[in-house]
Amino acid sequence: MKKCLTLLLLFVATLSANAQFEQGTKFVGASLSGLNLSYSGNEKFRFGLDAEAGYFVADCVMLKAYVGYEHTKAIDDVRVGAQARYYFRQNGIYLGAGAEYNHFTPKNNDIMIPVEVGYAFYLNHYLTIEPAVYYKMSLHDFGGNSTVGARIGIGYYF
Image 1 (cartoon, one colour):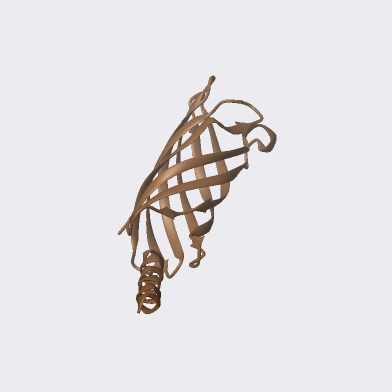
Image 2 (image 1 turned 45 degrees about the horizontal axis):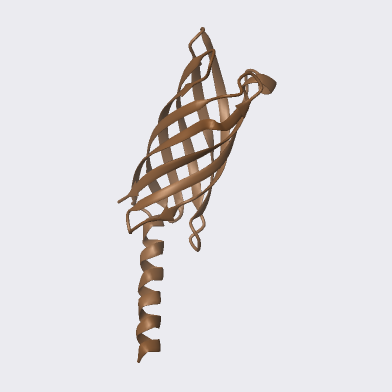
């Protein structure tokens, strides 16, 4: 009897864990990057904050938009971007890629191509903690503005 009940509970938990990646699910979140976890050729220290919203257009495929702010010792930048994410249904790992427009304070603009790998760790059916590593390739100044970093975020899937 205990084995049957345990198997039933595991089956229900597996179904509910996959439900967050279904078509029609919405997402809102915020993430924090930098804190000496990000590096570019121009600046060693970066601190960033992003707000993001997304929608699953198909099972395991989310389109998201975000706005962000990043501070360095010399400049500040504001960014806006769009990204597609693919979630692996079995474990919550995701891959993302997109495009981003950056406006730096001393009259400089840049287009970047961000790619990231992350993990959606579910605290409950809706709330996640999402650590990720990313690389942003600059189309304006490849050597100086391209960035490698890590971020930690919190997400709400509904």
